[in-house]
Image 1 (cartoon, one colour):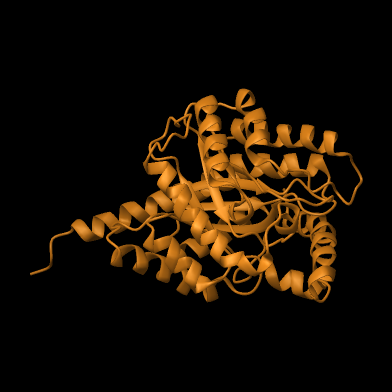
Image 2: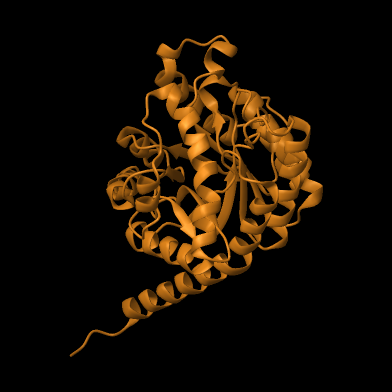
Length: 339
């Protein structure tokens, strides 16, 4: 399984400037590469509390600091962007990084980009579908669009937040799906994975494309430290966004319920976090897991420590167990039938 992390580059409630937050972000990406994580993603936002509005530029800045880690948007808000420019930017990133670029496209859970770029929010769904088709055409055909990437085809993932139609569309197009689980019980999201895989097979994509699970989480040396360090930063972010959307404030009892094995928030010691990822792997059989550490007012030094533990301890446990499971499954399927 591929293990990675992603961020929206929160300015920690305005505690630091955009310049310092971007410098901190470069440290995070560099460390993630050093400790052997597979993927680092940055999200696109157009608001004062997040500093990344141009993911490809930020990821390009990380190229000389890294050697192996894959660099992806998380997400590119395709509905309000130009597919040609998106392709050109990430093809350039792919060339600079020696074939490590990916695009994760989504409709966006924030809507600031629509009026900013002159789009009507009423066209939310139509814009995404039309522009995704166009982006895939550009990936397959030159059509005068340069430069061309190292990877052929350039990897494109579709981010899905809980809409069955979106899961079906990703599968039908043969595209990997990144399924966001930030609340509720993970098993309730299993049907989305099944819809994605079934749609892929129905449209001739067999084996089905990969699935990623993307979640909020945090890891520290002990369970107690992780729980205490992450609660206020997560609550700060969720309550701030929730005030805009009519959500009730995040309470401690809800947070603690989310930290249990069957909850959505992946918070704990390295062993607990690994156990939760592996529990979800039993549900989804996914090929990738991405965690979002940097929320609210989480200090930079604690983020770096979490990345270190995630790469050196959690990823090691998860990869070993997933490899064991696959070997056992392969051995069972290869065994001769009993007589």
